[in-house]
Image 1 (cartoon, rainbow, N blue to C red):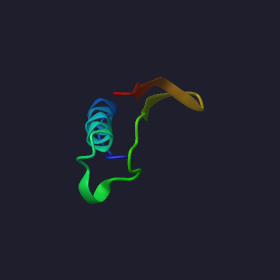
Image 2: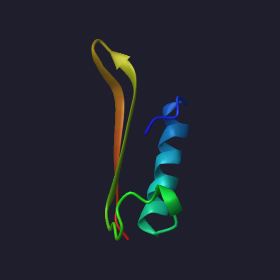
Image 3: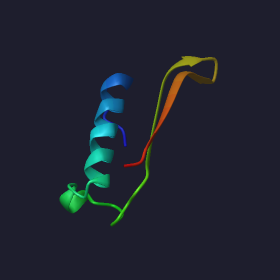
Image 4: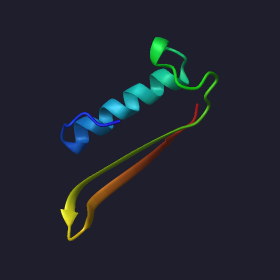
Amino acid sequence: MSYGHPSGATGAAQIVELVCQLSGRAGGRQEVAGARVAVAESAGGWIGAGSAAATATVLAP
């Protein structure tokens, strides 16, 4: 998922979407019925050919 926003805004949008998915409130966007674990990844900036910063978040109710 990419929103073309700074990594902070994209990361926040990913977490909101994952909470909707895990709680079954995503409606027509629901990807996996009964999902119990979700992972978000976001990276930004560049050092040479690699990302300068990266975060990974694992959500489980």
